[in-house]
Image (cartoon, rainbow, N blue to C red; front, side, top):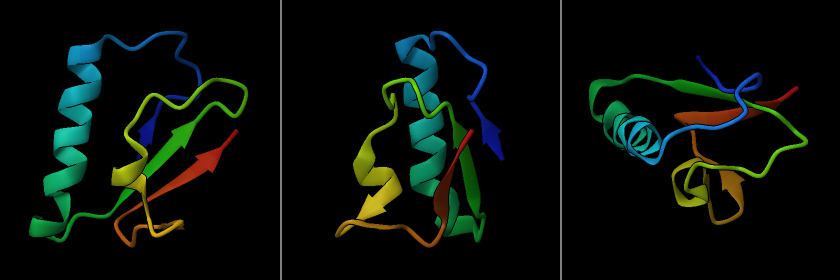
Length: 64
């Protein structure tokens, strides 16, 4: 689980590193659960989290 629900700001380099991990996780059969703060704008690329409007099988989000 990647929990960003209590984070006020994430540096762009860190976001890119997490997105890279999310992109390559399925190749190693790793499932990711991303927990974000519901009142804050999403910082991660929606294409990594959603595919055709539905959550990807390997990365789904939980809102606080």
